[in-house]
Amino acid sequence: MIDLHAIAVVFSVYVIGVIIPGPNFVVVAHQAAYSRTGLALAMVGGVVLVNLFWASAAILGVGVVFALFPWIALAVKVLGAGYLIWFGGRLVLKAGGTSQPFMGNTPTDVRGAFRGGVATNIVNPKSIAYFGAVFSAAAPRHVNIPTFLSMLAVVATVATLWYGFVAVVFSHDAVASRFRRGKAWMDRVCGSVIVCIGARQVWGLLPR
Image 1: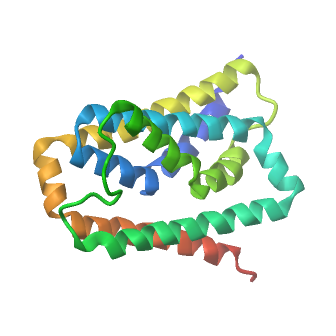
Image 2: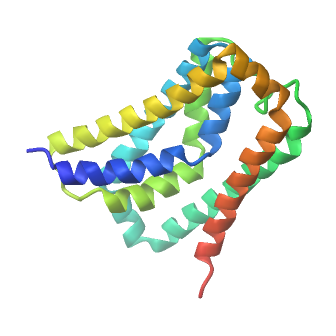
C-alpha cells in the first residue's frame, strides 16, 4: 500500500529544494540561452538522473550514515557551503562579459549536454547535503516498494517539470536574446543568491 502522507511530505520538501536557484538552474539556463531547446532538455535529463540517484540513496539510508558518523555530515555540509560560495562568487566575478556563457563553450551535442547535467549535479555537495539531511529526514524509513517508487516518481516529475520549464523558457528566442543582453546582471543576481545560501549554511553550522 502506498503511503500518501509520506509522499506528500517528500513532495513539499523537494519542491522547495528544487526551485531555490543553484548550480543546476544556472547551467540549464545558460545551456538553453546559448544553444537550442533539445540540448537544454538533454542537460535536464542528466540533472534529473543524478537527483534520482541521490533521492534513492537518501530513502535507502544515507541519513542513517550521517546519524552514525556526524563528522561525515558536517564535512558534507561544509563542502556544500564552500562550493556554493565559490560557485556563486565565480558567477558574480565572471558576470562582466555578455557574449559568452558562464560555462565557457556549451555542449553542442546531446551526449555532451547530458553529461554536462550529470557532471554538474554529481559534484555538487549542495545536492549531497540536501538529500542526505533535509530529504532523508522527511522521507520515512523502511518504506515499501510502491511507496519508494512513488517517491522517485515525485522527484523525477518535479525536477523534470521545473528544469524543463527553465530549459524551454530560456531557449525561446526572445527570452534567450534578452538573457544574453542582460547576462551580467542576471549572473550577479543568481550568484549573489547562491552565495547567500552558502553563507547561511555556514552560519547554521557555527556553535551558539
